[in-house]
Image 1: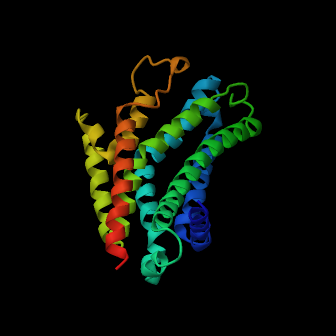
Image 2: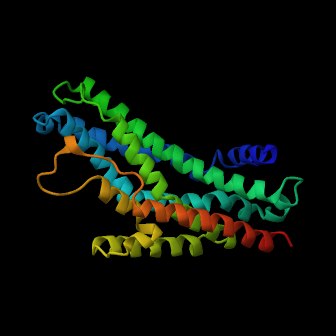
Image 3: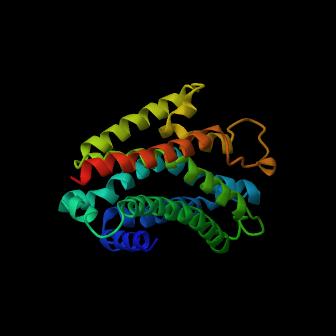
Length: 266
C-alpha cells in the first residue's frame, strides 16, 4: 500500500504542469462559463421557464456537449497523457526497476488517470450547480433559486463516470503499448465514431461497444420524448451499458498488467 501511495503521489508531481492535468480542471470551467454567458445574455427569453425546466435546460446544455461529444475524447486523451510522460523521457525500465512492486506502479498510474476523470466530472457537477445559482443571483428573473436538483446532477455524472471506465481502461492499455500519439488516439477516435454511429442508428447491440457507453448512459437518463415530465425523472445508474463498462474495465485492467509486465521489464 505504501508503494502504491508513493507512486500515486509521484504521478501528481510529474503531471501537475501538463495539459492532461489542467484539462481536467479547465474543461468544465470553460464550457460551463460559456454556457452561463449564453444564459445571462438571453435571460429575457428564458424568464418564463419554471425553475426545474430552467435547471434542466442549463444542465442539459452542458451534458449534451460534454456527455455526448467531449467525454469520450477527453477520456481517450487522459489515457494517453498519463503514460506519455514516461514514453517521452524513456523511463519505463527505470520506473519498473524501482524497489516498489510492479503491481503498485501500474495500478497507481491507472488510479491517477481514473482520478483525473473523476475530478473533471465532479467539477462539471459542482460548476453547474454553482454557476446556476450565480445566474439566479445576477438575473433574479431566472428562477434558479428555490429549485434543487443537486442529487440528480451528482447521480447523472456518477453514471457518466462509470460509463467511461471501459474506454479509459482500453486507452490506458493502448498508450502503454505504443509510445507514439497517433496509434492510441487514432484507434480511440475511430472506435468513438463507430460508437456514435451505433447509437445514432439505435443498434440493439450498441451496449457492447465501450465507446458508445457515455452516449447510451446520457440517452437513458434524459429521454427526448414529447410529454416527458421532468418531475418524474428517475436516474437508473446501473443499466446494461454500465455493467458492460465495468466488466470491460475489470478485464482489461488485469490483462493489462500481465501484458505490460512482460513487455516493459526486460
